[in-house]
Length: 207
Image 1 (cartoon, rainbow, N blue to C red):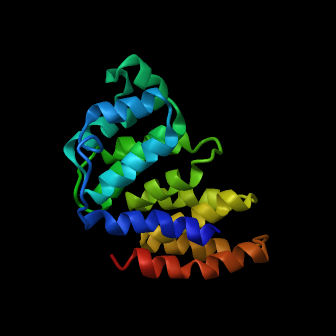
Image 2: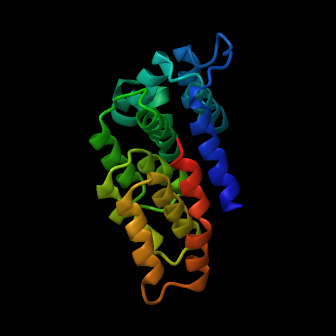
């Protein structure tokens, strides 16, 4: 299950360079985004984000998602309430991080990294997405942060963190995984997951 979820996330990233036909009222229409926020329609919000990544980061999407992540007070009142939901904000950061990793966008990385960590301070359903977004910034300073989560006993948390460390494609991240695997008290299940996650690096780091 975990590998399937990660493959879906990675597939969106790998398809980011493939332009697809977009309906006129979709990623290029700000009102569609505002409506999704106002209705707190997470399914539609995620669809818009995924479409925009595949469409090579249209300017309307980039501007609005930057607002959601960093300047939500500039949004209409109804949209502000939706933007305040962590899962919506994390999707915005995922988009910006993906564009940065693919050298299409140049967002304020340090601000986004800091905000992502704040959103991850409490476990949520969007943990995996947040960790993958953080990994996309590929900053070695974030490897210890993810490694601390990977040392958690909760399988949902540690698996997501291990996959994120793999996705960073950095020596610092790989070193953290080696240390974790060799640490006293690391369960056999976690060691096995670290070993099996090696395929993630071969796919994510090939790009």
